[in-house]
Length: 392
Ligand SMILES: *Cc1c(COP(=O)(O)O)cnc(C)c1O
Image (cartoon, rainbow, N blue to C red; front, side, top):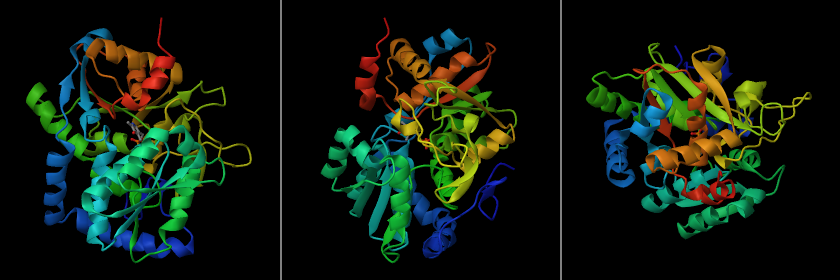
């Protein structure tokens, strides 16, 4: 009921609104992706790399001290322990293998903070493919270390100078470049956004997360579903992967944490679901943060991975159908929660993941509730930000 329909819609959201010159590339991808990712040979190769290269399955860890703090049983799904330090590699490997099957030799991708750029450059090195990363000029300057990592991995980084010179503009540029060499170029999109079939393809490639949660919970709790599933949301890929096998299981409450920035009323926020209106961005219909004239507003969050002005169509639908609860977590709440996890469990989370940890305090749990919360990435990349905000 909450999955994509045959036309690429989740309820009224999604679809593929692309200019004519991209139509051929969208159609080619649409006619190939399911055939390939359901093919046994593809699955074998993908699963083998997830196991031996990424290090899956990622642990499902019962966090005892954190559980005590919030009065329930909290399990952490440890995507931070993946190679390259986040969930993004699951998707990047899958799409790169698909690209190779489609006969493409050149990968292009967008990146904001650089995390998806690094995951893509990593996979391109692994598979020996050419790699071009589009990144806003402002982000190139802000994320110097990730730019160096991408270059070391053999990628070319193209600084985008249109618009606000950030992620939104990098996506626009990558989409525009996608069909310039249709015979050899593949656009490797980093989140559950963009024109159909990207949101569905990314959700399927990330669904390994909920598949593992099922068997790990069975082993540890004697039942294969939790009472709550919680994830942070930028575009929506780690949340889509966390929810995938539970979307239609109404015993499970779905909770999304989006970036509140300085607060919903501050004008400096990335709380797309709370504040967005229906609109079209980057080739799909969703909720978009926009001004009175329908112009997309530049989002803000302390966490670079969450400041996207749109939201994946799956999640827009989950929110308007009231299937998911959406909480806005501010910079300050996220920072506090990041320090709390560090001190209680010895795990430094990515600032993105700190947003879903910051949502714990807004929930009302009962002692026997089983909560699974996805730690989407590790916090090494965010140390400077954390240290600049160390609590008393
Ligand atoms: C990119 C990123 C996110 C946000 O992206 P989603 O597609 O919403 O998952 C969250 N956490 C980390 C660690 C990231 O790198």
